[in-house]
Amino acid sequence: MTRWRAEVLLFDFDGTLIDSKVDIATAVNLTLGDLGLPLRSVEEIFGFVGDGIKRLLRLSVGGENPDQYDRALEIFREHYLRHCVNTTQWYPGVWEVLQHYQDRRKVIVTNKSLEYTLAIVEGLQAGHLFQHVEAPRDTTELKPEPVMLERAIEQLGANSENTVMIGDSTNDVRAAQAAGIRACAVGYGYGNRERVMALQPDFYCENPHDLIDLW
Image 1 (cartoon, rainbow, N blue to C red):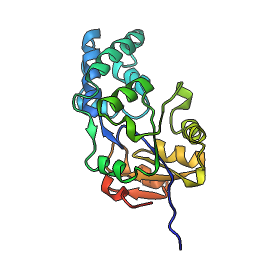
Image 2: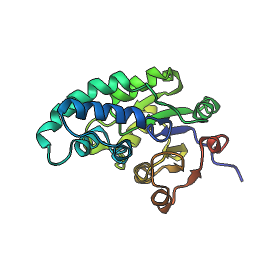
Image 3: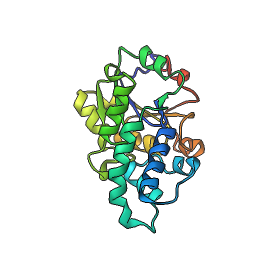
Image 4: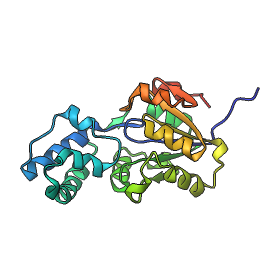
């Protein structure tokens, strides 16, 4: 029996390709400090990551300070662009995975804003590794909605039958399933492993090295 081959690899970004939590937390707490609001523990901020910057800041600022939210977005942008590659790096083994699949088309599909994503890709000198970067144009497109995955496939003129979405969260698996493509969950990122596995992804990898030669 011929093994299925993925021609297009759609990668989630934070928690799948990169470990960016510390830089995100730094920018959040610098923002809260500028606003005179109580700082958050790093672990608490980590729990807010995954559904886009707007939700992250809304939770960080707190429901009791809604008047500070718009200003927080502006301040955070300055801090995060300044600090987004201070400690952010590939998960161990990810670089090897990207090199191994250099003959396949690779796309970043992320809930992070395009500006921040491109800044990090450039900072990590990785722009040549990806054929496309797909980020939400508004909050209605955030994964688990399939819109960005479908747009990436259309952008490449690819076949959904030969495409796989790789990510650490339920958002990634659900988005892949909604888009009608295969889903590969990874167990080393920010996602909740039990919740992810309950969705029965097509593939599961405990660490990045497991992705090599999978397809």
